[in-house]
Image 1: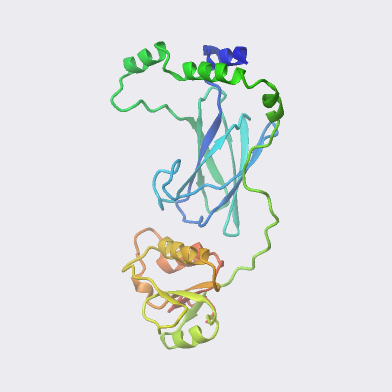
Image 2 (image 1 turned 135 degrees about the horizontal axis):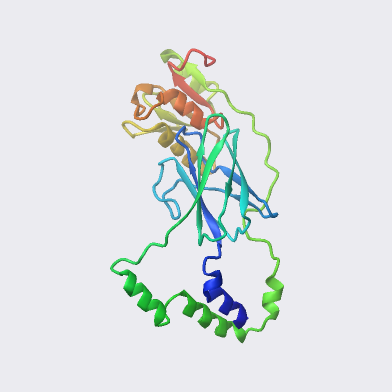
Length: 292
């Protein structure tokens, strides 16, 4: 074990890659919820990960349409990538340089189902208030990662090698694979202003309805108090409501003019794209191609 640690802390393998950071750039706003990414390495490694856009590390900023996930212990030099979300899929691939300490794979989702990828090295960020000479001094005085590895080696010798052999080949921990039921998308509906009450008493009866705009009160009616929500913020509010046990959820927009119009898209079609048929969506004055 000590010989292995000596090799790991020596210069010959100082750049051994432990994994990579995956970022999905989604300028078209196709992703929502928790997209599934399947990774297939050129040497047999497989992995399923779920990137997030919640601002929690390794993601940097919430709701900026950049979805991030760390992929540890992935050593294959090439990886094929498939992204699945909202009934759509994108495919791409990336090469991982074996000399990278930790690679960053960036993918941009295109409307034609392609994911354009670029792999690059992620530089190590120096500690605040430390210069290059300070870091070199820390390494030379035994406070760098090599010294920590040696300390761990001597501590682990007393535990024996049997446990280490037992752990060899154990599959990485992650979400258990399940057979997901087929979901039939719910088409969005358009309403006239006078149809709101009938919709709440008819097709939306028995639903917890999140309402943006004016609508009759009811025990299952939840109102959005945000003055000008983005489409993704409105969908996130419905998803948050769905987490709580209870009747199914739906979204009713009686004042579409209140939707935030910042961005290159029209807010109502953008809202429908983000809902992606996962729950009922009713919009007063919706596009004429929507069923009434």
